[in-house]
Length: 112
Length: 111
Image 1: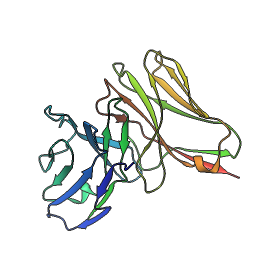
Image 2: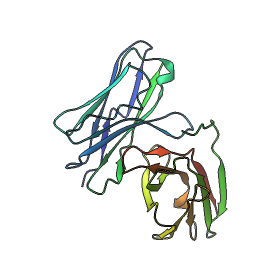
Image 3: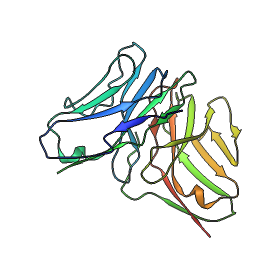
């Protein structure tokens, strides 16, 4: 079966531009998470969707970051007015009944 | 959360030997602890988890030990193989919500 997919795999943008990162979770998974991984560092939680509940946005670093999940499936993470410190790998994970989180391959974002 | 630097701690282990990777966690309320393996260019891959009411759990070639007294978690890999070379992260969670990750350990398996 298909795992979590993310697109694009790589994104290079100029400082100040907006970017959208997409996550396609495993079909049927009700939970979806976004994490950020800076070079050589661990993973930092950003946001968590669970079913129809209000998302846990406690990890979003600034109001330039937002995410939505349409129809309980695909999610888009949007970063407005990108800054160089936003450069990182953005990882999406989805979770099923057991809530084990399955990660996608990530989107490597480079802000010039 | 934990602060991390740019250089991951590295564990070098000879092929066939056992590996032990250690992790300190921070939240006494965490009820699940998980180990992930991340190979270069890929997302983290689940290895094994353990509930907070357990102190040991075994999987295939891996064993996780939990010491709640000192908030310490370890992953033991038996008969380490070249394919085990990766970065290993511990993570903690409460009620399987968001994961809080540790800094990671680079494991290098030498022939």
